[in-house]
Length: 169
Image (cartoon, rainbow, N blue to C red; front, side):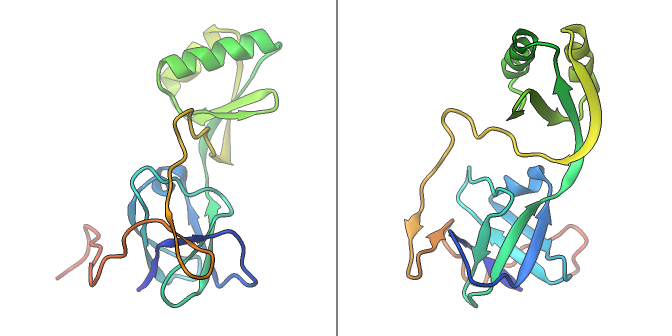
């Protein structure tokens, strides 16, 4: 199984694509499959969020591109900036992750939040879209540089097997 643990800033060639929804891109330990079907293990420092377009590599030096998978979201638009700001405030007050765009907000689909936003005067439409929420004021993180310009995302475990619930011994 391919193990990915180092983030690269650039690469000459891409060996595969890892398509993940946001929920999985914020996990620090993950077993998943590339688009080709090959299984991979991803190890990151707690708090790391993989973003659309990130490049990852491991011991075999193959480079894998992370792609944000389309998922159920709500696109929030308002007739004026003040109403949009009020919507953002109320979402933040509920600790709701939100993607902030030019004249819009995007949140994960949630019927209760949709009703609140409609009550505030927003237009809310369902869409399948890549979800890239704000990192937050205290987001970021750090890592340690390795040979080749990569950034190790986490200590690399030795002979650690990642189990899925359906795995047999």
